[in-house]
Image (cartoon, rainbow, N blue to C red; front, side, top):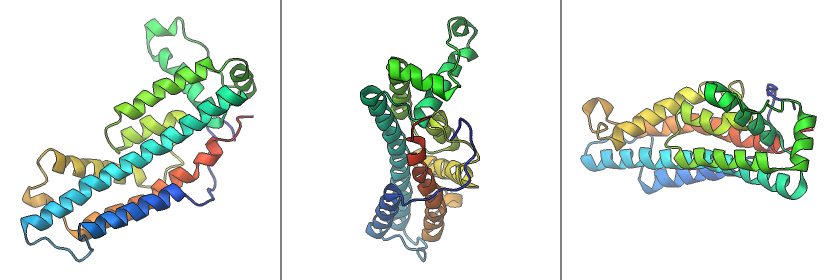
Length: 227
């Protein structure tokens, strides 16, 4: 796989994705959320809003866990084996491009190691640059505050995920999910126009899960040697 290569097909079981699906199913069951639920009391509305907020937290944790796994394995393989993963190569290039956006920083910026063979040789000789890039990207995980498209791009783009990879409509669904969660968290969710139903809440999650599983299924390819 080369830098920026499009993804034709993804195979393999996503245990993390299945675990997320089961956790969301358990969450719905514990809060008595069913497709037939139409709220007729404030308690029903509170349960639906709780499901939305907690499901959002589960999805956010899932995305951050995917990111952290890629960073951890990439760091371990570089430090202990001198091996550069595809994700590590992408991260090296991404971190080298960032200073070029600033005129002040660009003067002392390193030229990105686009050539995978040169990048692998550099990491085998000294993994410090990659380790520093991983440390900076971990700060993105710590600072992450949601699941909207911008959050997903911040976490995954530098590791090799491309727009063409994400399931069609996934980022729009996550944008909507983030806004709806914000409506509840910031006190707007109780408005009449935003009254939820079991059908709408569960349907949103059902549409999102396959795209999230696809994200996890790509992890093994990003953890393969860059050359």
